[in-house]
Length: 376
Ligand SMILES: *Cc1c(COP(=O)(O)O)cnc(C)c1O
Image 1 (tube, helix red, strand yellow):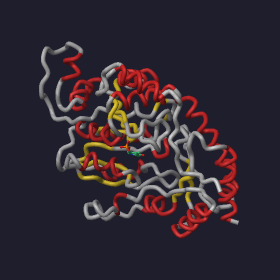
Image 2 (tube, rainbow, N blue to C red):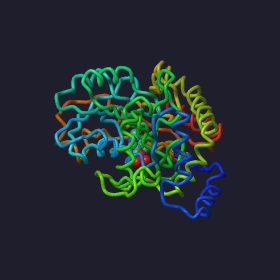
Image 3 (cartoon, rainbow, N blue to C red):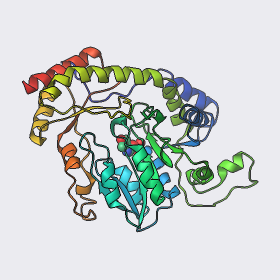
Image 4 (spheres, protein in one colour):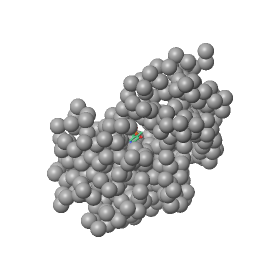
């Protein structure tokens, strides 16, 4: 029996050539030729004011928290159904997290919940574009504008996806992308910060370079460099950037292939959705689908557990996803006790199917048929 893993990192074939070029250039620390090419890619293709590669999306979120001036006691609103890094980045700066529930139709945060959570101490809203599907950004921008709040997009899963024709990652003050090997575009570990308001760029660069003005020094803008702010070592090496650049060049092929596989799952499983056995993924009118993930929602936790085991017996690795952060061992005592029923539903019932570049159509057929058999 051929095993079908949940994920398999995809190589375009150029990665090692570019890494060799980086190594032979004699400069393999950060902010070299390949890093600059990647920055350029984000500026040109998506139109952000500036992009900075980071060692992870987690890093980019931490940079966003610093740039937003988050201080102890400030409040930050985000969905509970997200990865720990979304919250950790702000908790590290002393923020209190107010978790909003997800929407009924998608795991994205429910905009109607945000307004109820805003207080005089609220500093930022952090929408997470789950599965690369946009949050309702106009409504979020309106709330943020009225109260002068920062909007930081957790765009970890959202590369090359759009909201009303505008690229995700360019709609908040800052946005964080991930190139972890489970994402569409990868570099093993890796991320990028997009800065959409150019006035924050100089400080972003300083925070990125350990709190020094080294970037300005290399450009000849200052005649010596020194410690001018807080910061950390957020930049990846040229080896990572070289790998990433090979992937970015291939992005249209990656997206097209993933989308074809996603659509195939969708049409094969729609009868189960129509029969009320499972709940199919939903992409709102205003959003595009970058096919980061194919998920559906099972009837209950036990059913999901049985389905995972059933698929595993057939060599298919399907996995669940986040455990709502409001119930996490670390944060449950800080949560205000509000119930978040949609988050709980996704925690217990959401199931993700294998989806990666080298997955074949016949494997999608086989996986879908196994799921149909399970529900028969
Ligand atoms: C993957 C992911 C992250 C973390 O990305 P890293 O690059 O591993 O730090 C953060 N948020 C979301 C929503 C993610 O999917």
